[in-house]
Length: 595
Image (cartoon, rainbow, N blue to C red; front, side, top):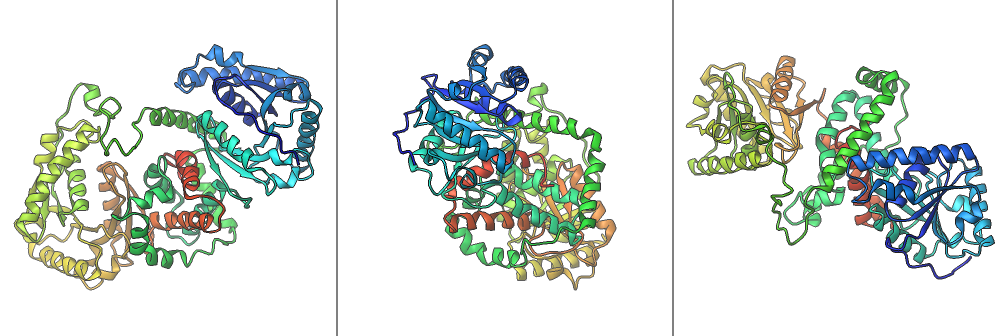
């Protein structure tokens, strides 16, 4: 194989890139390279296809300019860097990089790369890097006999690549390390996010994690645990919001005080228990596929799919703009939000705050820790008088102070939805006893530590207080994250009122709530809980039966297990696994579910 010194690439030199294939992917790559300062030669064997592509690319440039995604470049300057060419050898002359964008067909890719290799030899360009947009086939399948195979690799984008920046970079066993590093540099300077695999593996990074999560999502529907709609909610209103800017390892690193090691010490056995049942080899039951398809058609008729695709891409563009305006985390910011970048209060943008009507009845929060304070703020924001109950007056007094701070923070970040922060905070007060608190209450949320004996004791007190108060209709929710409601309420008089309502932290920013009834929970209670949570601006996802891990954790663990496997098998670094999610799948999942 050729081992010529690769050229040093910077974005200031207007060097040349070549795109082979003028379809949707080729056009996107053309824009990306031109936006990055490259002179771009677009080659296709069809002259009409080339000419059409250039016209469509110029339209795309205008769209990106309107979204602020040309990174300060003028659209006419970017467009001037693009030309269609009818000679592959001439296109490759003096080029530093070529990106193949032909259909996913082995014979076709083999021929195209043979042509590229031959043309590069003809014009004596032995330093040319040759990238393929292949989404499923490893580079070794179609370049292993080429002269320049050491300069060949996969550079696979996620559609649409000008809004989703991740690029999977997968070398073959013969690809030189210098080729990989130079490609990583080029992609980074193009403001893409390269995720480099250390070896070829079926499915690459993105699809392996996507398929692991999809298999579990399918299983939850196939086993009649949840509807396709609620499975999607668990992602689009839950995990996807985190994953739109943090990968799976970055996420768990913040989920335990001591980081990743602490996380696995605390939760490793629970994760192992849940994923033990995940063989990920489920047969694709036609009836279940039909159910999922039907559910999707209720949302979007077949003849409207094109419109929804355009809607999706518009949302991705807007999300890309939003993220580009946020202050990135660094060790120097100490977690502070830049006032210039912070999201303004939604009411302030409309000219001030508004008063809201007080709801009938009241809400009781049992447990004054972080979760309890969040629930109190959410229900107070929704218009309910809220009573906080804990075993000590000191704990309740502290909670009231912290809730006032929390409400202020929610106001500053536009999460009070135009409500007056003083009014919202004033709705929360301490309860002298559970008996008095439950009189006239429509909902109770238990927020004590995740300990079975504690939850049993607390729910026994709640059950007794229900009877004393004469309130037989109050919904009794638990914030339990991994224990079934049936584990600690099965012997209660009011057990039919009990169910899990598990939030994802922080619940005032991530609206998903897993609603998990027991076999004995009254169906009216489930419906009432769902309606009430929706009224509070949350997104309840209702499970039809108890299952280990509920919805969110089962899908999170499925993806985490595959992410761990990729690192454990030496296929990718933890950093690049995180990039594949936070700069790829997570951007879609932040507003669309897995199905």
